[in-house]
Length: 181
Image 1 (cartoon, rainbow, N blue to C red):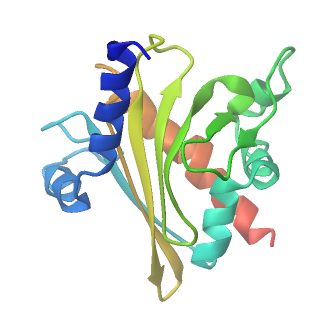
Image 2: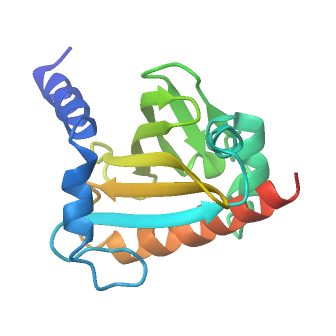
């Protein structure tokens, strides 16, 4: 394996291992309603779903269920476009995923069913070597499940668009999907 690929993998794995508290400390400096911090390139968002942690986790990690979530968003055009790749999410550590017709791809770095999902994540418009880290932490809440979400390491000037995208392409359709039973 070329050393540049090995160092990117080592960097990705070390970023995934950063303590969650570090990200929360940066997020506390946010003054943006979308959760975009200005102290560092990171997004922190929290949303509560009226569903169990297991149901939320499955919606994020099951190919069929996530495809249904995608179809409830305005990203439906990506999934149904000519040449679109099918939604696929591996259940293996290090396994790949393909979302939104192939526009979003990456690898699973951590899979703890019902608790946490960490991924090396990239958008199709980014340079081929650009990956960011997304972390979904599921916490039991009185109303169901609180999802604590952090995204860091994305390319410069992408933060506002990504923060908006998480809300409209993930959280809003996920609420609809979970409400449908």
